[in-house]
Amino acid sequence: MSRFVPRIISFYLLLLAAGGTANAQSTFEQKAANPFDNNNDALPDLGMAPENHDGEKHFAEIVKDFGETSMNDNGL
Image (cartoon, rainbow, N blue to C red):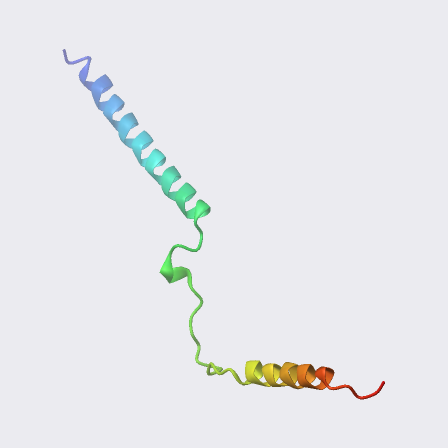
């Protein structure tokens, strides 16, 4: 019976090592399939530029003026 003990212990160690490797592989595959699921991966907010919509408003005004101007018949 004593000659089977080292085999059993080595078998359990082998199973433990294989299980850890399989778990690490599935975690890696999950992160590779969904790289942006982790909220900690987001870029930090450095507070350098406050969020405003001035550029969008200016662009909308230009497009509106262009549309109004193109609706007028200037005789060309």
